[in-house]
Length: 474
Image (cartoon, rainbow, N blue to C red; front, side, top):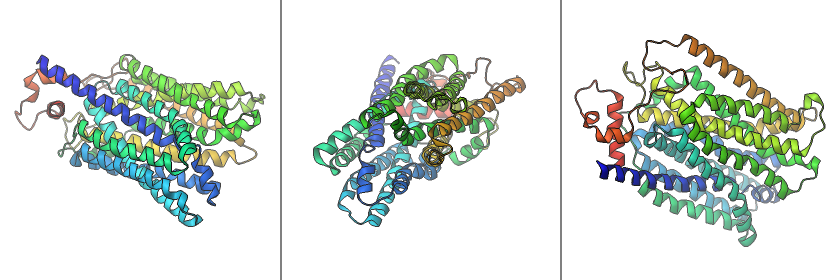
């Protein structure tokens, strides 16, 4: 048994290292071109709103395809889908680097839209696979695992513009795309050899997704993700225009925006581990509250007619980075735990507590849809409101804060009433601390042969998922 534990630990360590590298690449791929692509596109005749359409194609692809990949994952298997998604994304990144040789405006625009869409499709496939894999392997420590991984995504997001700008100045427009795209394709093959082939043809994720989507609490959590991502993407696309009133240069403004990534990465790791002990809901509520405060300070409280100050923006942006980490890290674990033990039968079984790959992939798909929709609505709605002279940036940021406050109030009221009316007869309920009863750990499953017996069709889902996890570790 000791040898099995050591093998399992080494296996998990290798998987975690691989996932960390993947998250760094994700962050770099998302951010490396932000400093030069819009300028190159405008030189080729594109208008500003057309550049926005091009950049919106990637999250739009994630929005419309995530549910499909989450349904397909259990029957297809993680390895095939991950390799296909990451290779597709890397190939599209390389092809985007060839757009500089297209001089016709319409051709440039059409090809950019198509390539961005398929890049987003590949990224969506990866995201569903990776998040589902994390939920399976670290199913009792999802928040801490996700927080640790998102720290590396923040690192990639922070260094991406620096690497992209350096490669752009060294070799022109195609070089950063060729380097990042080539690394992504190579990493796809290497990572596929390490990641477990998570799959379960018995799962019915589309049924789980429908039932989860009908839960008011799941909807509120997805709205939390949507608003958080909308806030982040709104700031990313509009902050530089606002900072002109403070006479801040491009380099300094980019450095200020990195505060979101830095504080998100730091907070994500801390909150991920802390939420496992203190409960997920406390941090989600705290994160939403901090977002309200950060957005109002970022906007310099326009309804009080306070003179905008640069330190308002800097401190507010930092608080928003903290709020993103506090909300985004516990959400995945909270949705999974709620899906496991809420008194809603899944997969047409009266005894099913919702602990199978179908639920994990459904959760991943729902969260990816929420993130993608936020990445679409944040820039589009934010830029539209900011462009209205009577509203501008300050009132737009304040409006985002008020919408977040509304969600915070609804979320808090729902939790209060849920605890009040929660049935005490069910064993699948939330305890007073806001956490949940946990399933046996993977190590306990491996050591206890009783978990692996195939007695009859009435075996609980704990026993079924135990077999799958032990196979993964072997």
